[in-house]
Image (cartoon, rainbow, N blue to C red; front, side):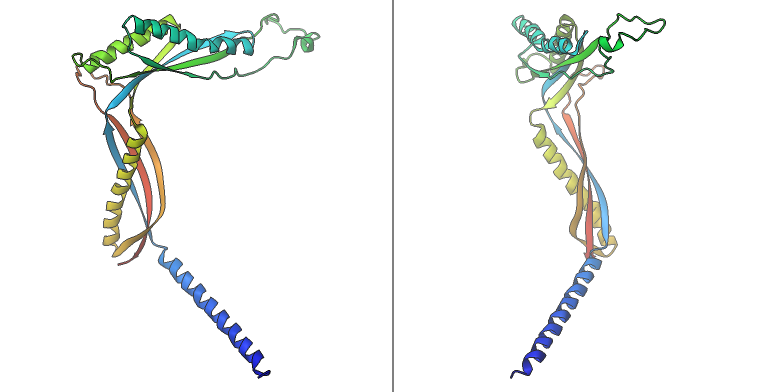
Length: 261
């Protein structure tokens, strides 16, 4: 019995090694079966009614120091809010949501302190006493809901009235006005639907191509959402009397794994 133990252990070792080799060959065969792939691009467009209209007001503040310029830029939000509230009280604007963007820091070059320049003679044609201004951009977004539009007023006329009032607020605040931009009520939900539809649209041509190749789709190897974009510009066509729905466009790229039919 003692002499059989080495042979039994050696047999188990050979059996395990053989089993590992078979498993390795099987894994390689599976890998080879997954080498065939096909790529397809899917596109989809989902429309949604717009919910609010937005304008962006921008004003640049300049001061001898960065701190002073930032302090001035921080007053822009209150300036806009006061002008909007006055327009709402006068009936020129519906209720507006005011969203202020934090001002950034001015960029260099930053001059050396005067003490470091005391022994340096100014070059010809320069003004040694001039201190460059530091500029900071202040930005505020005004968003107006469309839920309160009067039913007896054409939506395009109402949008035009809001645009006129927003421009008046911009002039009062000495700000540049950009827009309008239209936005949906639930943009995330619409984008989700557009992506799902694009994935579905990518599968159909890939499935047809796989059938032509006497194969079938057995798995997804890669899936990439390449873009999701909105048509958010307000309608500008001459003579238009109705606002159009917003369009959300999605594009995906899917790589499918092919197997035998």
